[in-house]
Length: 385
Image (tube, rainbow, N blue to C red; front, top):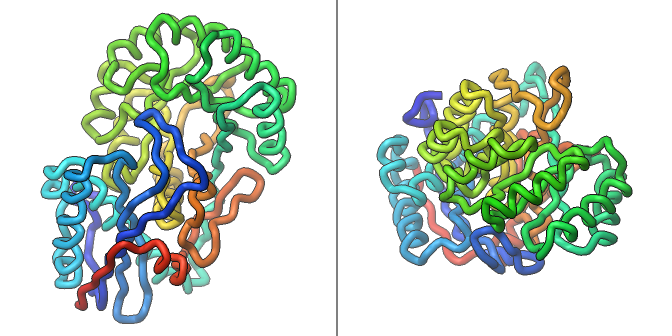
């Protein structure tokens, strides 16, 4: 896909924007802070045949009011532009920073969903294989973590992500890992997400202590801005290092790879600018010998469906990731961090995206649960083509 974004804009009969505010089931603690709800813009495009596609523009949940207002301004400009046949270009939206990237993700997601909806009736179209996803084990004591991990494995997940970073001592983290491995055995892949909580010395000590537990990678051990520290940490430990919060754009991904700060790049398409930006990051990471794992930005089901389509595009593009934390001869597809709809009180979809044996199908069509959307809508407007 070219740098300017989608290759062509179909003739649209209607474009609608819906500003929603959906509560989390419980306050969510992330490396960027604690937040209680997800605010985002849903973008719906419909063609003259009645097909429609949905995309989502999501900012950092703790984005400032100024940033949120900038995104709202862009959405108000984009809706009539799309209805009038003008597709915003990547350069003009990239110049807007975080709001521009979010808007571009929504536009690309909606148009890709429309293309999928148009092709859904084609019996010759091949259905993408389901996408492997990881299960997140929340922070808690050893017994609670072990029980949650065992339940996830019983449901078919073979990759577990353990939230960490709150432990006061290395022994507390080791106790959690020991109990978890005792519960699930050596088979499931295990990721540790420190959320930027450690300094360099603490990270080196704790990661060294985790080596016996066969860790796939440790995510964001240091603060997001410290690429130099992450590069130094990689030289001191034998466990792969992943960056998540450090990767908020194509530029930051390139900087992290140039600095040799990561073995793994966690890309959230909603944060970096959608499909085209994600695929450019994947290409750069592949050339640098790094793995790319996709994640959500705690979006509704609309955003998750968009990322599932991007995961399928990565696979179709034969961007094969090298195994991390496994034997060199292994050839596996990494699990992506997409099983996040349950964090919200509702994903806003008429039919939830199912997770079967640790995998999610790539949906050809998703529909909104209109009464639930109405419940959480702050504002909506549309333009006709």
